[in-house]
Image (cartoon, rainbow, N blue to C red; front, side):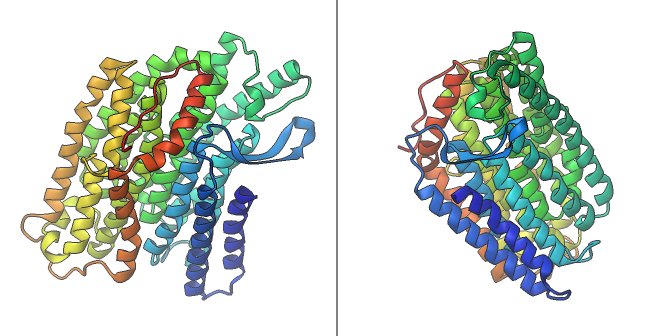
Length: 501
């Protein structure tokens, strides 16, 4: 019952916060932090009991839900799901602590802000743990509700526009996925005599080649919007720049991984022939995302929009690794999802503190911070180095595995993608130079450095970034069996990576 408990705890915490009398803002924050810490501890306890040598689902729970439609309350995790759930559970209390003063001046109270964060945590766990396609769809769509209100009610000046744009893009993807889910219902009822959405049973379907391609596209487009991939990415910069830093961390660091996770969990094993058919086209789109995101990041003047465009480039690497269909690239893509979550968290956390102190998100307004706020400057520098995949930091291993693995099947795409390494150096070093070094910009002379609370929040993120840069095998040993199992279902398998061993 580990997974059900992980779903239930944040919901209980949000209900407690909602029941608190008006004005008890500090208590609401404490309940949110305590609940998220307790949930993270439970998640770590579950991870310690996970069998690293098994590539199939563990901690399985299955109960009848809507029997007439073959829908079950089905939960379970493999190595990929475990890694992403751990990422979400660790980031949740960090975001709450880092966002201690966020939500002020919103349309609703701060109490509502922290309650929504806990509700979102429940849905994040659910979407990575669901083994029933219909249940996954429910969590996939339910995530839109708290995110919409977190952006639209607590964000910046363009929050209403950004929230509506995010919602419309996501609903479009959700409708396409729903059509594909209905298609699976019809197929299973026809072939099995009774409908089912259990992913362990759907692999036995015999799907016509053309129909398989249409079903694949229904899922893939929904996931490509969420990922986000070019040209379905335009909602992300607006949402990231309008959202509070804490919301942006969960949006880009965790929720967008649902797109790439869905490609691994559903697009590859359920529709293997279609996956092979569309792989070259998807790889081209991934390479465009990599280069496009990096180039646009270089020209950004707004700090949060810059981070958003760097993420578009990073997600291109992840999608490239997934559809290269080699074990090396697949393991690198999954590891990249985890590492990107923490590098993005570090960037948005420090950027949020910089913006709050300066009351501006314009990069040109942050000159000379190294002299005035040295600790904050160093944290931003380390986060930036992780984003550009500096050797010794976690993202480096992920990027190398993706490029090496992708070269085995798509050598031209892998070679072109290496250009992004140079572009990443440009967009990170330019913002570091403009914001941290040079003359102290007017208005920065007396900015305060990081508080104790802020240092406590950023410390575990930086520690994870450094630790996984030297010991990636901690996660690779969990990821490899699942990647091998998935690629076996797609009839494409390569030797597994052993980096760090």
